[in-house]
Amino acid sequence: MLLSILIPAYNEIKSIDILLEKIQAVPLAKEIIIVDDGSTDGTRERLATFQSIPNVRVFFHDHNQGKGAAIRTAIKHMTGDIAIVQDADLEYEPQDYLALVKPIADGREKVIYGSRFLNPENRHSYYSFYIGGQIVTLLTNILFNQRLTDEPTCYKVFDAEFLRSIPLNCTRFEFCPEVTAKVAKRGIRIREIPINYYPRSIAEGKKISWLDGIEAIWVLLRYRLVR
Image (cartoon, rainbow, N blue to C red):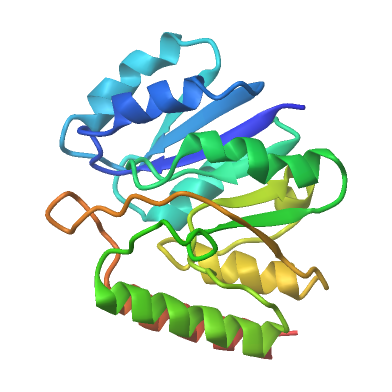
């Protein structure tokens, strides 16, 4: 089966080469779809040189639109059987793909989330991010009858055909609560698998903020009320 790796990238010149090396080292058949979301730090120019790599395709937004918009662009171009979202930083470990895709490849699941909290060896970044993530996860469980430990995780894995069937409207970080809400409303209980996590600081390029947590709560409430 072919794995489509969907990478939204914005100003990640320091990590993009290392990330590509780590992904290519994973022993799976894969296509790597990178969407540059209007980078201004040299990422855009560096990604242009990746287009000669056989299993890499790069697309460019003329201006910064947000992570959700970049993921939606990547979904339009994916051709694989399974899809995974991969941030362009180095907080997550691509070798975890092997465990994450197996339940979907075996036909047992449509959706798998990688949980940072199910791995007791992981450390977490800022306390405010930790608390915000827990609140969003708790609200998700209450509103959508889930048993998640880590709703805001980057590693969300889907049967590709199923992901294509979900109409998404997100532009920024609200991709996570929107796709979770719409998956849950299809009657799917989302299964989690432990993953590794290596958090970076704001000084190192972390972009999410507490405002995104407020937006996530609003998105969850809105999609709970929408039929």
